[in-house]
Image (cartoon, rainbow, N blue to C red; front, side, top):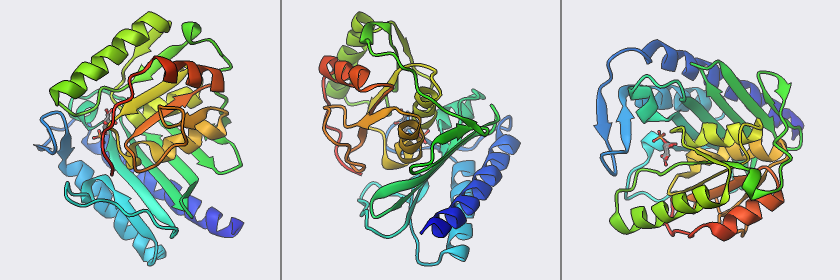
Amino acid sequence: SDQDVEEMFELARAVALEAGQVIRENFYKDKVVDTKMSAADLVTETDQAIEKMVHTKILAKFPDHKFIGEESTHETHKHELTDDPTWIIDPIDGTTNFVNHIPEVCFSLGIMVNKQTVIGIVYAPIKEELYTAKLGQGSYLNGEKLQASKIKELKQAVILFEGGASRDEQILQDKLKNVHSLFTNARGVRSYGSGALSICNVAAGRGQAFFEYGLHIWDFTAGNLIASEAGAVVTDPSGAELNPLRRRVLVGCSAEVAQSLSKVLTHLDMGWD
Ligand code: IPD
């Protein structure tokens, strides 16, 4: 019900602000860094501490809600997305930025009910930017309503993309083909180091599209709602309907930009969350 959404939203906002405080406190400190799937896939003690804190707070208020978090995930463990209310969390998106004192870092939290995202919150505490969205009610940056760019032509578009953490040679070859295609077909190319914030940037009219092959459900769930509530189009990069467990996404400011971008990309298969 509407009241359930309001209650979840209040808690989500509170834990996002608290997570942001922890990110700020640790931003300029030396980090204990560990690697996960590749040397480019990082985790710090702060990621783990935030995820634990958030998990505890959610379960205290909503004991039967489900939880998918980046740092409580293991390579062998595949996620099951059920119809239950599910909190999907990335404690720090942009961990490599966090380790290198680059301010493009955020906490990302999406809530799905019946496999539909009803709440999205992305908080970038160094930049002091809080993005919020509720399904059907628009999206906001620090309280200001968001509207994605109205551009329709790919040749006028600035495209945000992330290379991701895979170091598999064939995957890298295909991704480089895509980068070449961006330079050929679009006006500009940017790569900021946080998938979640890149999607929010498209929602805020800071560029016209974002895509990535190989990110995870916690990287895009919150951002996707923020973007679609700002009028952007969220799809699988092939143009098909997005599958939230399929590890790839394309967000375009308009259907035209999304379709034109989809046509010039090589679509990589990155497995499933
Ligand atoms: C990563 C960042 C990066 C993207 C990776 C993500 P993390 O998230 O969003 O930009 O390329 O695919 O996994 O590991 O910093 O939370």
